[in-house]
Image (cartoon, rainbow, N blue to C red; front, side):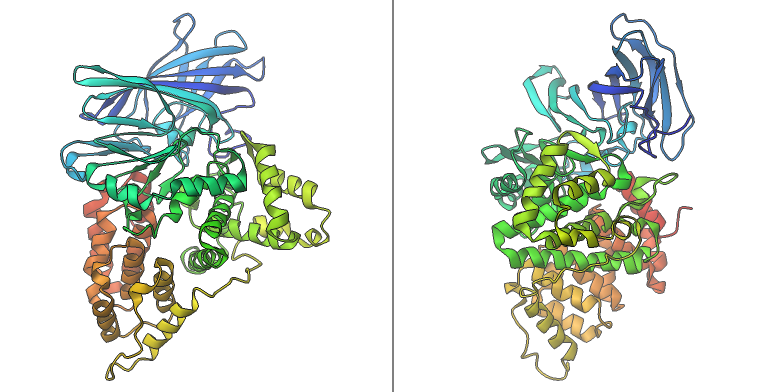
Length: 606
């Protein structure tokens, strides 16, 4: 059976039959590491001749399928496992609108769910469960049309231990009903969403209000720190609304997950998931929340039709995130953030992937590929740079920002591709003479670095460059009289200082030791700074960096940190086996997608 004509990573055929609503009635079984229950899919025949519906599943145990209206059993078949999971084909009862109920269980091999033992949580008393469905992992949590080209409302009734809190990417319906050792909570998401935005978390959680429509949730040990670091959430929301239009999702809560969460944040509607590595005590890493807030329009409201067009989600989001930063902290801060992003893009394109790698194109081909394999900063930073270029071309923010608002209005609640964006841009701004020079083929389809680099305002970077140059020129036999107060730098200035040194010739170990002592870098509270500091040590083949680098790579599972640290250690021949052994010993604590990607970085999996 062929894949979807609009999505190379889905078996579903929404051009024949499409989902309008999904209801999940599931019980959480921590002992067996399973969700057990049923998924009820409300379906609409697009093609009156369709006799079956195709759903995506992966590693699910399907017990049976019934016609919800009559209770009659429906014939179904499950295809063989592939890179895109399996195809579940279900016969359809008569009628344009029908409901089918799939009784099923997840399995311990489910790639969407992370089951944590009490020992893996900060409280050490209760287990924890969380999901991560992007890109194509929802099919391992529930049978569905697992493609961003399909948007549907969803509801849920979740039965879980009564001493734990259940949260979802939706609005709670009514009170939790306690039934002895278990409790049932009900949820409803009335804004149509794509399957990867369905999210579930269960754990010992506390809540703190941080704004008129926002709260933060976390384990007791982290919740007050999180409330402090994310205190500016409402300010960010208001800045985003000024840029993008009304916020349609009702509430904006944040859940700080245990350390194994593989991303900085995940834009689940009504409930952003966030890594605890954002917590620095000074709001220094709160830009990630601005990013996830921006997704409320760029990705969640206007969505890529499939993951070949992922830049329509992430490039727009990074661009908008930095607009929010600019409104809050000034244009130099926006430019500085973009400069750091450009440096990360250079490393990814020129060193990690290679400038001819097809995954460095804005619109890569994903037929026969897992979207996770294509994941990198390219759609984020190259996509954002493309929008920066277009804004410069048409006359600046005064022209481009109103265009973006009209774009969000035009395509709200829809899933689109890059050609649709191009057509709308040309329709709205094609009369600007300079637009004729846009090389759409090169921007969208050519691999490598962008063909344009913004003229960044580097005023906030200069102090970092000057300090880096002073360290490079310093003779350790002389007093370090030039040393500035590193602690007075912003977190981004600290990052630029360390990045500048990292990209230069390896630093002498005596200088690294002096730097560590003077700046107390071995006890840094900001994981972003600690990460770059350790990479500088590894690049300089400094033995003192190895143990803390391995520790950072194992105490948390954020891929942004884990993968580069393991790659750096792999590139150090004398430390390669130590890196491999450490990863193999800790592989089970990472979420599946992170473990799989690191295994490839270490050349362990074919």
